[in-house]
Figure: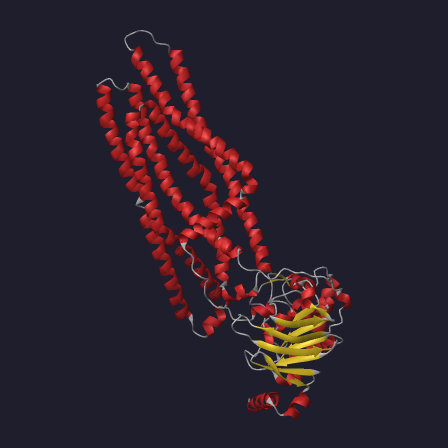
Length: 609
């Protein structure tokens, strides 16, 4: 029964990975996005082509309007006036505007599909990534931050991609088209805007550089806030029992203030772009009106050409303002994309190179550690030379002080971490030669910290055997003595439960976990004080079921209450990552070493209690 619950017992460090430079992150994110949308290049090319045609048509439209004006002005007093000709030009102008602006609907719809398809694929990759991720990453990154990367950041990224072609590329093409049209109409007036447009872009790029760092800080802080909310919610009762509300509020207020500061600063600086560009465009427009008016009076410009330039002056301000707003969206999207791709680029577990496939039903349960060396970091070795041999059907208890390496030993056996030296065997087969899924399917676990999934009672028990029938589920529940409280629930086995469901006591959750393991019928059991959360009466009721569960199975018991392991076939006493003493309870008591000292101390504390 594959599960990483043992590894998840390790405390998680609440810290982020190394900081990145915003510029480097954005460049890398842009390259990754271009690579991932390449599969939709047909749609993108189609959008680029039609948006290019549409914006060129819009750039030509003012000149057509100017021609109509020139035709009407030249016809005044001559009597040479053809209304059909004017109507034809007006209809052409109407069609041009319909095409120019109507195409945006098609492009927006198509780019939404591109953006959402990209995010759909990235979410699938993120889910697969989590399954392949080294537990070291999970252990050192807050859950809320990881969730933020695969939810909030991806939504921001999709919004950015969706607006790129229509808002950025479309407006750039329109701007280039307007400049070209102005040059064709009158190059002297066109020079006015050719001079001010680079100034507007310069202002925009300068402010973007200043806000880039703030957008990165903003997205990181959202991850911190999600982590705080997640921790507070999932540990709500514990937080209240220790009176930590004030501390949590202070931590949240600090992160919230950082988000507020970065958000306000980024929006404040971004807000300068549109007003500054508006001022620049209005100055250019004023100069255009003055110079154009003088040229018109001197007959160096027709009324239609002057009118066209008035239209061009108004139209230029629109793409500049749109680009200013959209660039902030793009910038924020690239920052979010950088966080997403950083997560997707994290180191994964070593790929399986299995050469042997175990038949689970034929697994005997023989386990051997041979000269195993391991450290969570290369510079800090925890296990130096761990060796032991568990025969099939043997019950082996693992004891020792906190931090001794008990849980680590199980993590290595299940290949949650890879060893640095030595070998681990299951039925004389090196576990490196077995796929992780195949290896873990031979194990069942009942932990001190129970876990309940969102679903029905039956679903939770069936998790150990997905194809189990209701008859099998009921039989196991009766065997574990949990059918009595299940039948009393509102909908029996179809009652919906979750980890936060207050209707289940800790003892009842533990009984469901035990039933789940029994249904899976594993060949090797890992028990972490499996009955520690159950009251004395319930513990007695399930003792016989547990004895039956352990029959003819290899069992590893991580023991905290030493009196529960007196009958174990062998006891491993661990300290500082290594095995210090091995033997039965009676053998270790005769040895009068560290285990005997720990046992006497525990017995003394129980007597006093």
